[in-house]
Image 1 (tube, rainbow, N blue to C red):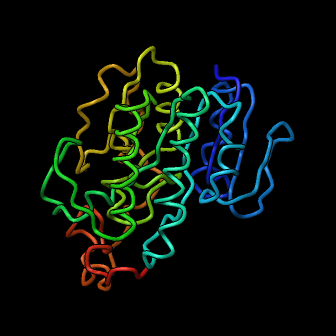
Image 2 (image 1 turned 90 degrees about the horizontal axis):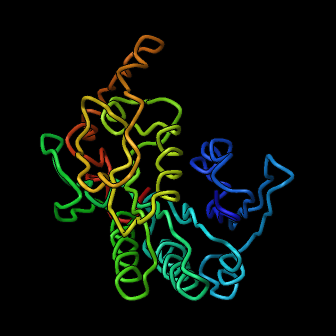
Length: 266
């Protein structure tokens, strides 16, 4: 069990799904976001600030022996809006990790680093980047930063390319990309408890029959997806695809409709 886990982006949807599932991973939690939020637990320490502020990030990381880095802009936006958190912020997190005892990092990358692949293509983490947006490109940068701090400074990371982390899928694309919150929490626990993590790249996806992605760098982890989107179909209807979604190319690319949107537009 960790002594103190730092969770960035704590006001976001993924963090809110994961926080109650991480009991037992760490004795204490330090939660941060640029927006004000209220933690569900009185035992959590909360800090409000900007990841682009290096002095603030130093305060965040100091005293933590694990980092779950979910913070940043999570949708396509103009590059100037992505730059502070997704470029400067991720550098600040890793710089501080190298400075303060090299805690392991779970870096929340995104399926949008390879979002421009066609849905007929099944890929692994060894396939080239093919981002579909400025957002996807910023996550390519974050993955590179994680790798260079592993090589140069010994900061171990799990680069997790999150698919669609929700309680259940809400559109047809998510039948391929859905990532059960329980699966994500189990992966986090495994990454913090394995003796040697190194710096694997992992597609964050459950064991869905229609998945576009195959993991090749998890054999050393005690983790296997326990969920399949098909198992939910008994309690829900398969999402319908509207004519508008078909026209927008929802099921043409791994990244869904993002590929066909103008750069910088959400």
